[in-house]
Amino acid sequence: MLRYWSYIAILMTLISCSGDEYAVVEDLDENKELEVPQPAYFPELTYDINENPPTEKGFELGKKLFYDGKLSSSGVISCGFCHMQEFAFTHHTHRVSHGVGGALGTRNAQPLHNLAYKKSFNWDGAAAHLDAHFIIPITTEVEMNEEIGNVLEKLKDDPSYQEMFNAAFEDGQIDTKNLFDALAQFLVMMVSAETKYDRVVHQGTAEFTAEEQAGKALFDSKCSSCHSGELFTNQQYMNNGLPINPQYDDKGRGRVTGNPDDDYTFQVPSLRNIEFTLPYMHDGRFDTLEEVLDFYDSGVEETPNISQEMYNENNVPGIPLTEEEKEKIIAFLKTLSDVDLTLDERFSEF
Amino acid sequence: MRNKEVFFLLPILLLLSCSDDDVQQELTTELNLTFDHHVGGEDLELSGQIYEKNAGEHFRIDTLKYIISNIELQLTNGDTFKYPVEESYFVINEKDPSSLSIDLEDIPADNYDKIRFGFGIDQSNYPLNGVDNFVPTAEENGMLWSWSAGYKFLKLEGEYGNSIAEVEQKFLYHVGSHGENLDNYKVVELDLGETLRLDQDGQSIRLDMDVLKIFNAVHAFEIAEKDDIQVDPVNAPKIAENMKNSFQVDAIVQASE
Image 1: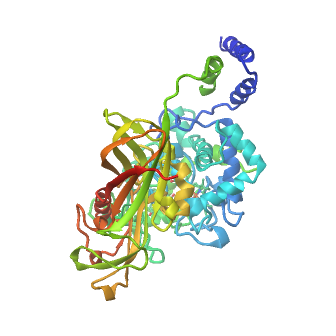
Image 2 (image 1 turned 180 degrees about the vertical axis):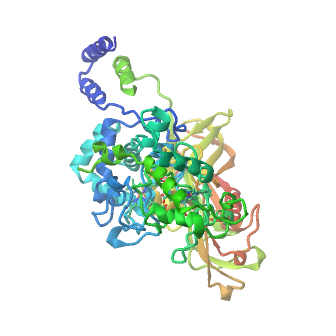
């Protein structure tokens, strides 16, 4: 049926006054829309796919941009430099990210996955919209240290980009909107839901070991008030009692809102792929999950705005855990690893 | 999906495009907006002249920049003409004379009695998608908070003191929206005072902005109380409110060539 109409459409196009548009029809048809994976048990998409529907060509362009050092002032720091696929797109070897000229940031690079389901971005939610987020890494001195205007000039000087923008967008313009849209099209496709946890809990095709099962029960009772739901985050800004690092005195959410009640709160991170995304916490202070759990057990401090959830039944801050309990929780956390994401060739640089 | 729709629509579009093109066209014309800044009764002169404000404070201005957007004209019949949103973002920068005069094109020749424009960027209605292409301009003018992916709506900087001789303490007001939390976008609506009759020879609306009102319109500010206002959930909304009330229409004149 569709085919039949297509023929009529082509025919009519041919016999209408000019024939040039025929080529346009073909071009448009080649650029297929991609479907953003939406596991049934995930929350609603937050990214408005209709505003910027990912297409094959847009994705391809976004990927090229993601791995291109042209987006930085030095010409060598690409998005992929700090967001490495093997580590669920984090900057694995560094506590805080290294940018142009080795400049040190103050924060640990976040994993890039399930971004189409996030309500705000960065540890402090400085960007409320994914498309707007890219201003931050590109223009921040300690990251790519470049100006958007300059990036556009560099892309315009490169004929291969002109071709790709033409193929990806109807207006073919190399402008900020299309630059950000292409990056977003690449990123929203990174959906991570192929883990042992998903197979056990949602697909019924695998089973937890006894240790993992026990870990899940502990996690549900001690951690899931904040790391809740299928993304393992309530997407709120909270203070889990992490001692303040005097080197940065990072106020987190407080810097964005200017509200002292938000000082030292950070977005509760998703724990999917947590096995790969070390080091941990906003400043990357912990190298292992063991250290993280030692912190929850005995390192929690009563810093300003510490969350009520951090107080145990004796009204003391902290989540007391035995060594055995820690091991079980870690075993459970490791069922959240998605090897498909880290190996998926669609997202690979080479 | 979208592609298929295009597929079906194309022949129709093409047929239409073959038919007689010169359907009666509405007459359109140009409109110029000019921004004049003054301080009470005096012209604003950057980095030299010292002025007096409320609370007996004296001050000098080194930088005055702000973003306007979403320009609309109200017809005398109550309808509204909206200037294309993507083309209606401007940085007004006292230091750059060319930025003080904005030429709007393709305005229907008609009668108007009100003008509206936004102070800043309306992030709730256009969540940055539509305004992405304003990024390079804002960046050039230092109107981006790069760490928060947001725009500075106002940049007012200078020095102040208790007497003319003491004007040396720096002050700085940077106002914008705070992520999704606090929206400081404001709509300025002004009566044109007389009917603006737009015909083929474009006209110009001269807008006046009084810097004193930024310090004292709805809310009164003593600079000495807080001389560095940036991401400030208490003071930034008040300054935005004052900004909204600092404009007026001075005159409508024949646009000079």
